[in-house]
Length: 297
Image (cartoon, rainbow, N blue to C red):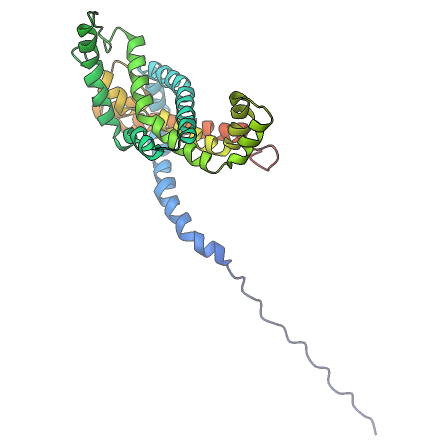
C-alpha cells in the first residue's frame, strides 16, 4: 500500500507593515507648518509681486527700482552706516559688559540704566534725538550758553553731520541689545580662566584677546547676525531726524509703498533687503564657525 507524503504547509505571507512616522516628526510638524505659512507664503508672494504684472513675468519693477535717483544713495548710506556702526556698537557693548563684570556692586542698577533705550521704540528714539540736534534743540542751546555758535546739524546740504546724527542716535538706541547678549555670554564664562591667565602674568589686553573674546565667540556671533540684520532695517530714527534728506533702503521701501503707491517696486526693495541679510548671515556663520566642529560647508 502506497503511503502518501503529508502535504507541505503553505508559507503565510505577512502583510506589509505600515511605516510609522517618527514621533519627533509629529511633534515638530505643527511648528514647521506654522513657520512655512508665516514666513514662506509672504516671501513667495513678495517674489511674485516684484517680478510679475498682469501680463506675466517682468523686470520692469526692478528696473524702476534701480533707476530711481534715491536708490543708490540709499544703498550707500545703509552700507556706510552698517560698516561704521556695528564695530562701534560691539566695542561699546564689550566695554560696558566688562565694566559690569569688574564692579559687581550696583551692577543691576547700571545694567538697568544702560538697557533703558531698548525699551523705546525706534520712532520715539528718533524724536528724542531730534529735540537734541534740531536748530533750536538742546545741543545748540548749550553751545549758545557756552558762547559758541550753533550749527544746522540736520541741514539737507550737510550730509556728514546728518550721518553723524543718525549714527549717534542708532548707537544710543541699539547698543543695549548687544550689551544684553554680551553680558549673558560673560556670565557663562568661568572666572577661573581669567584668574589663571592673571597668575601667569597676562596683562588685561592679553586676557581679553586670548581668553575672554575666544570664549565669548558664540555670543558675539549671535549678536553680530542680529545687529547686522536689524541695521539693514534702520528706518524710523533716520526718518524722524532727516526725513528724505538721508535716504535708507527701508525708507525707500516705505516711500514706494505709501507715498508713490507702487507695492511692486516696494516688494523688489524688500527682496533686496532679504537677500542681503541672508547672504550676510551665511557669511558670518562661515567666517565665525568653530574649526574643530562641523559647520556650513
